[in-house]
Length: 337
Ligand SMILES: [Zn+2]
Image (cartoon, rainbow, N blue to C red; front, side):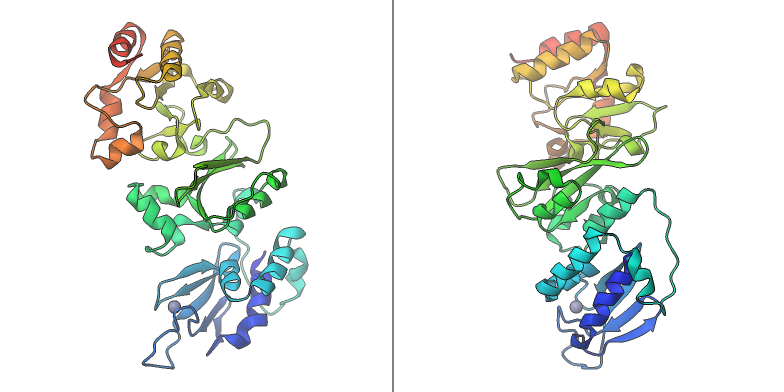
């Protein structure tokens, strides 16, 4: 119930917010100190703090900025923010339930503790303003709007260690990234992979949260009674219906999911000159999997690139799924090694 913690810190800094006032339970209003609000009318106050899930969120109807309370505080006072993070992420916040007794609020229902954690730590992409770096990135990759709800933004990759402090030593950089969470079949978060936005050499940083669960992206959302597409990259899976991603070429993980082999359609990247990939496709065909063999008219390397150059990938995969002998023949004419 960190709305209490957010309120406590909002009160602590409220003397710096021009025209600050409480509008109703869990809703506060002030002049926006990020854009300066209306310069013509000094009485205009278009910044709002309101309850969103377990936290307060800040939104300005003048500049359209939308931030978690934590990130708002961070932008204004880094010292107070470190104190806040310490309280927020160290021992839980139950003790604050008594600190601000005059606020009533309904306790929301969560899928799991972990969901709370990820929503607390990160901003969901669809809640961010349209000119935000990560939103621009997702749009430039043509990631469908409704899929952006599954994705998150982290301002500083170092903060990701709050999901698993084993990574404390290994993560040294501090750049912002797009975060793709993995859930197990019980809807518990099992890991995240964080994609670079600014061309860092290390394109993906992956954090395991649960040790013994295979990281398979999208597993929580698939219908197991329908055909399931299996791709390499999590982002690629967002362009297909009922799709999961193994995050690389370790399709062996699929055995651990208990999904019927007949239901799976394995979609490798389009790399006919890559010996390892060719070997794996051959093996998958031998094992009886349905596989997609890309037609020779397609030159792009992966699903996302195909989408970006205008291919209808849903139709492409549908029309080019094969198994058994047909798959073998298509594969032989596709491979270049
Ligand atoms: Zn503003």
